[in-house]
Image (cartoon, rainbow, N blue to C red; front, side, top):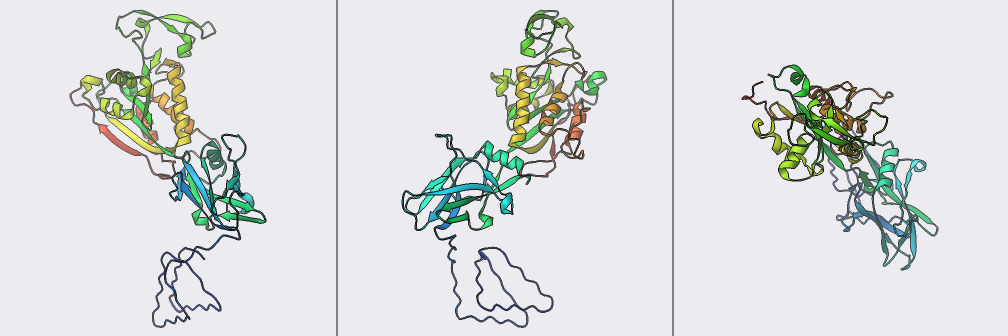
Length: 421
């Protein structure tokens, strides 16, 4: 064997007889005996063992990053190389290679399709020069698709089938040297401001709180826009584009018009939507609302409530997801920022802060009637910041490095003691 661990435990007696040869290569090997110990050999050689050759033409194969640093793991998006060392193959000759995901059984191994960018044809040749050669590619959607289809959880293990003349061999020689490939992880941060304990009426029900989220550092949230012209003139008539909001404001059966809205009629039950804290932070930092980052929002929230009107207790809920799951949430938010729709506390009329965060997360974790309701699930009935906070307490990370870890809940701001209703 080449590498590995052997552990022996004998409560009574144990004996082994090796008739001919006993060969082992170990990083660590410890042997001990109690009353009797016999070890006979013509010669015992200490030192680094020679790596066994793979075959007639192939000596070994190994994985590296794009700078030729040996690696055991990689994430989708990395540029990687597979190297081979050969013997008896002339310079300029080519070896055929095929990359597979290892599934223990040969007939179940899934092939990874690699395409040469310049020719758009399948890349399957390694040119040999000086007894060596390598193939390089950037892992992408092909690898992600293989990961999704493999039904193996968070990772796949890659090896390479190499062929030259009459020899076909899998490399690296040892399965523990196969490359572990998995998705990047992205930190999801949900921010929940609960209504102040002194709130009453609609404020106590949730209107005085807020729900928002960040995907990595990209920040998103949603709220009401009562002042479309940013001039605070009560009863002002403002013209808006139905196409921009994706709303048929005048109920004429299309969304192609520019219509007049009376700001005096807008309230939390029916008004155009907008990014909420996002717009405030963007204005302070003189940036686009699309460029607002999580750290900027945290700094905004932590100010005294006189400056930002954030006076309830503020929580962050953190958990890690796979990049593909994060991308589904981002796609949903980008569409919402393109078409801001209608804000309303009534779900049959429009959306509000909690329902937008909930719906974005549901893109990655939709309800599946065929699976038990557990873990990362937010029901459609969740409508308030308090309800969202309770749902997220049971969320777990889905990325490889943090798989199964319960979400982290942190109070980043206590409710303001000097606020009065």
